[in-house]
Image (cartoon, rainbow, N blue to C red; front, side):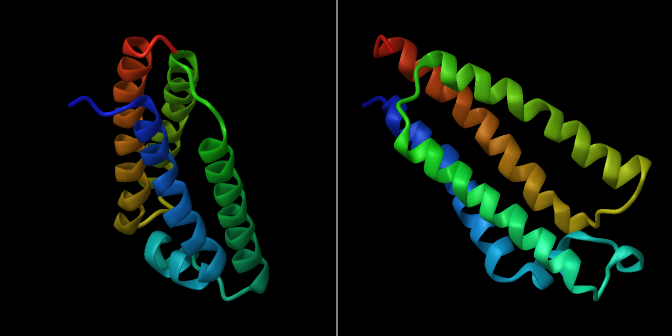
Length: 128
């Protein structure tokens, strides 16, 4: 049995829900896990910024969950993910701010990109 486009769409929202809630509810642990020790800050403004980033991710997940994706939605979303791979690479290797813990973001993006491909195929088969 083939997985529906709607299921792939929900799977795209899961990383946003998970990582967004984590960033919103515990920004200091996100900082500890994802930033190199020399760039971590105890300043409250960084935790507020990370929390706001988490809130935006949760907002994005709500948009994904309440929309009806077509194959073009999956395609556009997949294309929009591509710059995040460059962002992760740049701040891990070129201007090293991220620690290896930031791999969780990379892995989430890889999964979401794969879900976009599968969602695009399912939506095409469903005539969406």
